[in-house]
Length: 621
Image (cartoon, rainbow, N blue to C red):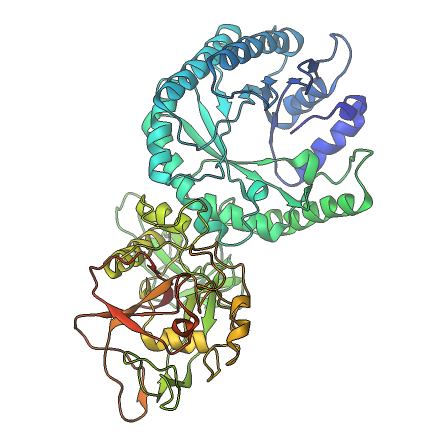
């Protein structure tokens, strides 16, 4: 909850209405971001009101005492125009935080006046940057000093800190090692990781982008005995203006972080979700958006059993000699019902009866119950296929693969034209795998052209690409986002050309006019000899981007000769010398960007202009 100066004039009734609206949606914690802040001119502004007069913090604590809320009080928030890891800054900030902690204690807490007080919040926000060893030591000493000051005042109440995912985004494995060092004997009791979705506008693939960092912080916190919570941003920046996000996006944030954290907090209810109290400078559009987010949040996460908050509730009834079990889930979920007659038994037996669903409602019937026999039941949710936002479903179909005999640009490596029928649908990624995605999983960034993590990864071998797919499959299985029988892999040559053509038979997916290529592809005429962030140019008719340029893309199969008649589910040889690459690259001419162009490299070669795109499908090409 971030205070503003105008809020100091809100009467207690307004604050109580805000808190009542929080309670209505099962929010039971308030973290006051700061009680004192530094202004741009270096002066200090205090939100701590004079003793004996009601102020916002006193009202919040009073309400929390009788309504089961916990309250964490924020200390001193410095201006961000500082050398944030400099020794002088940290020493001065530590001293200011000690002063504010004492002021808050004297004003609100001495004499055990508020049972809802749960700890201290440290508003300084470290980030996931690559701190130098001296900076790590200074940060740890700073946290130790703040904790010691608070402990001397209030005893062993926890100290919270909320790092954020910085735009440089070093690999999660490096972040994990860094925070193992920072948290070691630091005095930090609870770490709330900001997901940075609102700040960095990660509107797509939120789960894939955010989850690796939460997993890394979970490991670091577990190793240091620090509790780990999520701090989800409920705002969206549009044209430089901050405003509420929507409940659909917030659900993706919950889904991304739920496997790793104990509790959720959000930045912040007061400024983006509260439906009852508004600042004078907020226009009607923002007010309506805040009220809409509150209403949608209530519908999606309070009035409906949402798994990260509430496990499915099992109800039972007797119909004749049968037991009917009912519970709620999400359309498409799969469950198994298990039972046993003695809770001391180690093994649960699976119920043989079928689980029936009518969408979000599920039920199972067990017939022939023995009289007066105690029976215990539980339900298990199976891993559910969760397809990343950026993956596009490609239905089965028939197309002409290869290069027509009369094409004057045909090269010796290209296949003569033949008909292919693909009998299975699959998902293919809209973009080439980025450097960010690659290093999140492998902890390395081999790319030649660095400087922006949203550029495609290059300088990878076929074996590197296959290893990436295997690791991604393993990770998603473990996270229960990929059922058995599904896998991530490279596309076959036929799948690649089928999706690149997107129903066309021309040189390019947009036709035969090479003068339009710059609208769709980065190649030697417009790239300045370097790669560019994915997704900046026009997509093909099926929504794939950069299929005609950017980096060449590895295919799953070995290069093979073309069949002389129509073929079903065409793929290359089971073994060979070279794997096919497709799609053109930033330093190559337009003829190499055609849908039928191909060449082969050995699986161990590491060309600087080759990356890859992934497919999600039932296991095995």
